[in-house]
Amino acid sequence: MPIRKNAPMGFADVVLEDLGSSRTTKFLDKLDEATPWRDRRDRV
View 1 (tube, rainbow, N blue to C red):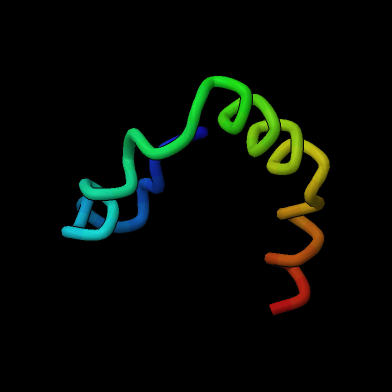
View 2 (view 1 turned 60 degrees about the vertical axis):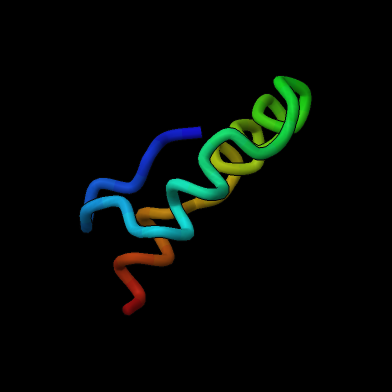
């Protein structure tokens, strides 16, 4: 899962960075790819 680039990493980011297995990471990456982020951003 990509690290956010809009702000420096905070305490929660550091604590949760390595949480989950490789299976969880793959699943979250698939969800990220399936989400139409550009459409959502353009609506805001």
